[in-house]
Length: 266
Image 1: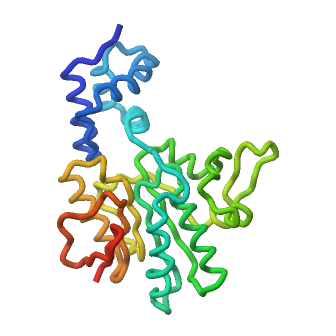
Image 2 (image 1 turned 90 degrees about the vertical axis):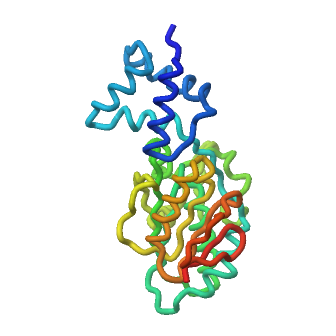
Image 3 (image 1 turned 180 degrees about the horizontal axis):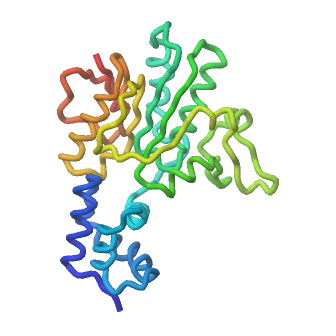
């Protein structure tokens, strides 16, 4: 029987913390439970054998497997709606009137519910107001959930938080009423890509960056690095939206606090 040694546990924790900022020091059972099948499936005899093979794996398939198994991807439609209300009442009415494209980054997008919730809200706003075209990017380090986001199909139970009027306008039910798919119009406004928030982003400046309930899994050093990276990609007068439990203890000098874990670049 394969059992995880103390040293193997420490090595998994170090890899996840050093590369992705995720603190798993209190998650030994989770690591062992989620990785044992991957170790056995490959005919390996220890957890360390998996880690050693991962270092040599130029395809990064083993690295992606580990990430997919050990990251938390809990999300749902219309989560923490206070943020969306603030965006609707305080952010959108004050956009630059000459803005041709509203660029939005959703970091730690998981399986896409947050992106599509925001897009539905924006399209609702567009029904009564002028709004520029939307260019949204959702990024995550878990390739499995990114593919779910691209597929844009969800089980019927995920409908419960979505307003009925949104369901009628933006969702398509399948023949058996078991799943629904996001409308092609919304899908066309977002692209999904692999990206680690601890690493520098591309040079695009975004008017809004959402990174909600991501840093709660990070150590303090990873939180600071993530905030630095996000702020670099935020346009002047752009908004950074964090999770309700992620109030910054130290606000960067070029940012101001707006309430509801939302910050504005001045």
